[in-house]
Image (tube, rainbow, N blue to C red; front, side, top):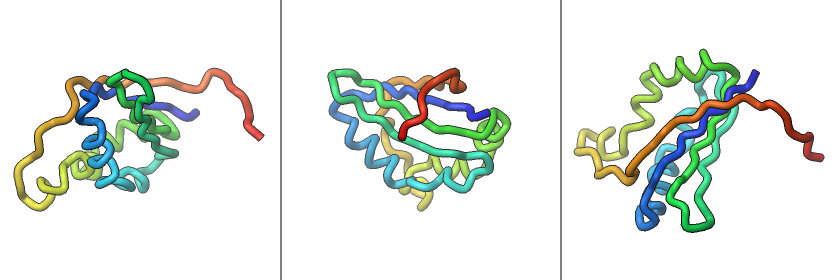
Amino acid sequence: MTVIKINAITVPQESGDELAHRFAARAGAVDDADGFEGFELLKPTDDREQWLVITRWRDEESFQAWLGSDSFAHGHRSAAERKGGPAPQPVARHSEVWSYIVAGGSDPR
């Protein structure tokens, strides 16, 4: 059964473009993880400061294995850190991970 993980990240409006840039810089970092089914970064279209990172996993074990992997640690370092430089300033003020499974829906045609 697919497990959906949503990372709700609170980002001041003036830092949103930087968050999107950082995600783009590590695009594909999770794609080869066993059990990974998909990823989306959702930008708010109103005055909210919560960006949503949505990932889908085959099961909870796949997600947990990725969290504990070298790939996760590497993917969450900045380009500067991967080259031995200092970490950039964080753009997020808060983050929390939500976990869901699909309980219903429709089949788009």
